[in-house]
Length: 243
Image 1 (cartoon, helix red, strand yellow):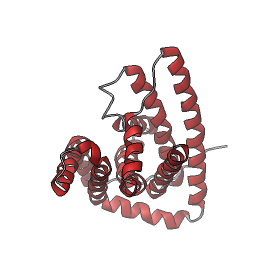
Image 2 (cartoon, helix red, strand yellow; image 1 turned 30 degrees about the vertical axis):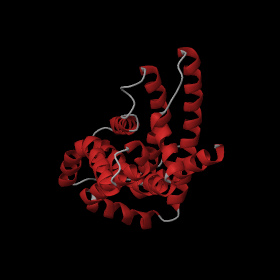
Image 3 (tube, rainbow, N blue to C red; image 1 turned 135 degrees about the vertical axis):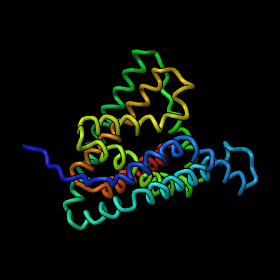
Image 4 (tube, rainbow, N blue to C red; image 1 turned 180 degrees about the horizontal axis):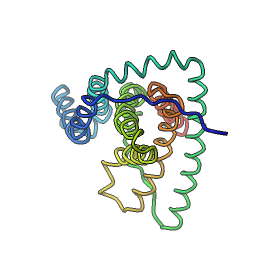
């Protein structure tokens, strides 16, 4: 049976230029700006104790910036929700099931690699998220379940996936998945063994694939934003339940 696909839309030239211009700020500048703003407001210099507020400001700045840059694209994508109707929820459910299946396979692969490579798997990004959740839960929830999904989906599924889709579907999938995973590893990938980085990469690739697949199937990035938020919320519930 042929897989259903819908038109993923298109970015305007000005949106592509704006997104690419903001990308270095997203990767480097916005993090330093967030730290500076939080330390200025709180008067504290102990950044490790301000992970929650700092991440909230960081994700907030980026969500606002990308929403402004891609405002016309986002408005067009929002109108697609009404066109898809209740069928969109079916697409989101399928996307979530795809994610669960791939995440389980990735978990088994990581466990096998730990044995084969004699490496201890540690996810610095996950550790920071857990610390933020228990020290500043409100900031953590707003960051992960509202702001980060907006900014990250507009960047990885909007600028990267949608921008490349008409040129090469395979490249759109591969690059959006890889960049999405690498961004979550930037804080630790150069300070740990390559084997650990590769295992962490495996953990994030299912997220990227499921979200890109959902975007392609539903034809609206708004559904991806919602699904991304649900994934993070369920992850938080799991973290809380296991503690």
